[in-house]
Image (cartoon, rainbow, N blue to C red; front, side, top):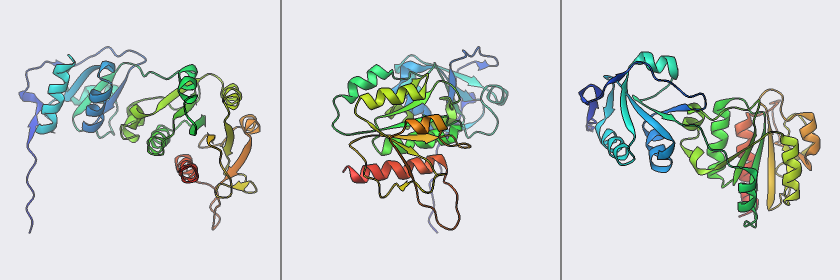
Length: 275
């Protein structure tokens, strides 16, 4: 039988640090958790990390701990010790934090004008417009697929939209840092602006099975997919603003797909057509 080498782990109780019992958490900050997510943020956005917390007495992979301590020291980021009560009160009980948590100071959304300036340099481009996607796991999954499919930006509303938080970052597998997220006040006003930039809007409406199949639709080089909420899909007014309504064919009486799956199918069909 093959023997596996046991990972070298260390508990944080041996580190010289004080235990944090209470920490004032700014309203716009949030926590990310897990080894890879924290290390990813340290590599790409260290300036957004206020503090890193290690769970007292939790065994952590020593090689990983060395990387964290080295990167934190270079960026002058404090490492503090916390207990289970701190995690429960500030983050939640049912999370796989792996003994490490980082407090992030706000999230920088890209502005419409910043995106527009970049967009003018591209000959072909795919963007996503989310119409009230409120589940953080769906939001994170959409971001992950969008990064893989080379989507240039995801547009979200400032209300009735899943926030950027630790769950979104974790579900996106760190890809939140690889794609532009643009926050707007009004989705329908955004659609009109996007059209002026030469984009054609395709509403992905799974309730309209009489609409043209996504696999029969010829997508333009400048394309925007509109994805609706988990419960109600795309709102009626927003759907009216779309140039086309398209759907994914369903067999055996299946009514719809999860919004993140619907988005994934659409993104890769556009990518296939625009190789």
